[in-house]
Image (cartoon, rainbow, N blue to C red; front, top):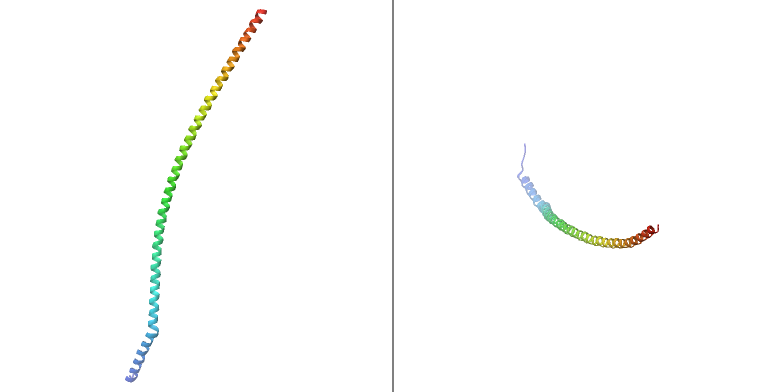
Length: 140
C-alpha cells in the first residue's frame, strides 16, 4: 500500500511552492507583462487604424463635396461662356447683316447709277441713230 511520509510531503510541498514563487518572479510576471504590452500595442494600433479610417472617410466625403462644387462651378462657367459666346455670335451676325445690307444698298446705288448712265448714253445714241435713220430715209 501507499505510504505517505509527512516529512517528504512537507519537503515536496515547500519545494513546489518555492518553484512556483521563483517561476512567478522569473517567468510568469515577465510573460504577463509582455502579453499586456502586446495587447496595449495592438489596441493602440487598432485605435490608430480606426482613427485613420475615420479621417479617410471624412477626407473622402470632403473631397467628393469639393469635387461636386468644382463640377458645379465648371458647369456655371461653361454655361456663362456658352451664353456669352451665343451673344457674341449674335452680335457678329447682326453686324455682318448690317454690313451686308449696307454693301447691298451701296451695290444697288452703284447699279442704279450705272443704269442711269447707260440710259443717258443710250438716249444720246438713240438720238444719233434716229437722226441718222431720218437722214438715210430722207436721202433714199
